[in-house]
Amino acid sequence: MTNIRIAIQKSGRLNEDSLKILKDCGISINNGKDQLKASARNFPLEVFYLRNGDIPQYLRDGVVDTAIIGENVLVEKGKDIGWTEKLGFSKCRVSLAVPKTMKYSTAKDFEGKRIATSYPNTVNDYLKKKGVKADLHIINGSVEIAPNIGLADGICDIVSSGSTLFKNNLEEVEVILKSEAVLAVSPKISEERQEILKKLQFRIQSVLQARQ
Ligand code: PRP
Ligand code: MG
Picture (spheres, helix red, strand yellow):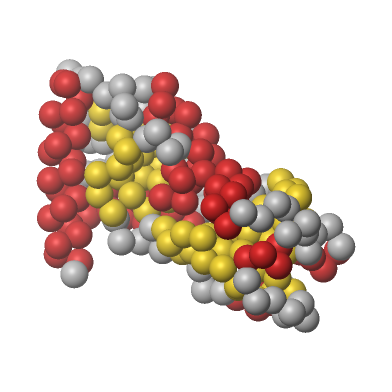
């Protein structure tokens, strides 16, 4: 029998809530997340535990049919990939921030400045729209430390509670986008699998309604 293949985050902020929503859909998944792949006992579903940033490519290639992923990751790496449901968790912003000591008024203040970020495409699109040229430094984590160690003048990263910015004496100055977890769909999904996906989407919609 055909299964649909869903990607969820292997570890990190989305992992727990992603498993929780599947569970609330009445789907029980065999084994823990030590294995990179697991199957559901009572629904035609296989779960792949993957790194966030890799998921858009897996969707594009049709190696997975669907995924629970932050909209921010799709904006950065998967603009070509569609999604069908907003899932109501992992809400965050992708924002520009500068040291509290910097005098800031508009995005033009980033002209000629160095910005540390893990979201180069998102920042580039934004700066282009604003007609600002800046110098991006791409780093994969702990971005907020960059201004303090002299690597950058500002940063662009995810803001959720704001506590990481606060602890690093940074101030959020521009919100580039607002994001939450979504159900993304591979452009290569087969018709047969699309039928199974519809059943999953229906269950997800019921769960989301019940949560309201
Ligand atoms: C994420 C993100 C921010 C922080 C935002 O980092 O990169 O740094 O969370 O959350 P907050 O506003 O609630 O503080 P994470 O802790 O996942 O680590 P990483 O940057 O090393 O990936
Ligand atoms: Mg971080």
